[in-house]
Structures are given as C-alpha cells and as structure tokens.
Image 1 (cartoon, one colour):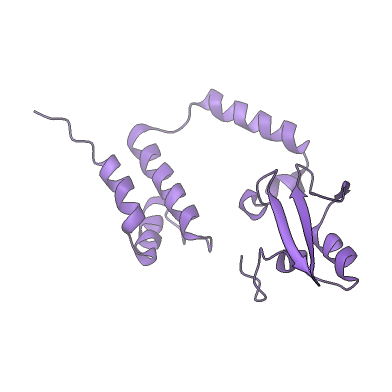
Image 2 (cartoon, rainbow, N blue to C red):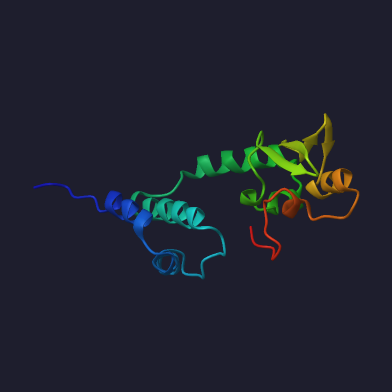
Length: 150
C-alpha cells in the first residue's frame, strides 16, 4: 500500500490554475476574500496555507522568535510593522530611470533609498530632486502605473 500525499500535486496545480480558481481556493482556505495582490503572492500564500493545514503550522516558539526578530527590525514602530512588505522592493534592488537623456540609479536600503550617496526616505523626494517638479516616486521609477496599481 502506497502513502499518497495530495499536497505536492495541489502545489503544482497552483502554477496552471486560472486566477479565478486561485481566488476561489483562497476563499476556501482562508475563509475571506482574496487580497488584490499579484498572482505570485496568491500562489505562494495558497501553497503555504495548504501545507500548513496538511502538516501543521509553525511551532509556538518559532512564532515567538519571528515576532521578536520583527520587533528588533522595526524597533517596535507599529506604523512600520504594518507596512506591507511586498510593497517595498528588496533591499539592494537598483531602480534605474532615464530622464532627459541621463540615467539615474537609486538603491533600495533597509531604511529607504540611496541616491548619489545620500539617504532618502521616499522615492518622491528623489524624483522631485531629479525633475524639479512633484512626482509620485513609485510612478516615476516605474513601480506603479498612473492608476495606482502596482
């Protein structure tokens, strides 16, 4: 008698499922409406949740350790801890934008952004420094379209 584990097949099926099917699975597994995030996010969270339900979640001591690490990282700043991590590009990412024939490179840092060796908290401040006009920095660097979707 073979021990057939359905989870690997379910995880593989996520890659070929229609977005509407992913959203239906989300409703089933999380008992709420899916968030308006990209497909990769839905796939990864559904994969994790499927495994969590089948094999069990993190041990309580692991959860406590992760919470402690998070507090150490954000200094207990509740506003910072509520920021969606998937909104911010990964630390070290280089954002490149050509403006009026000149290429500008901004590096994502732990605390914000670095441009020309100076730290900035927002991309909008950098876009303003480059163009001399008010810009949404996320739009200027191509991280968001003009309608506000990422």
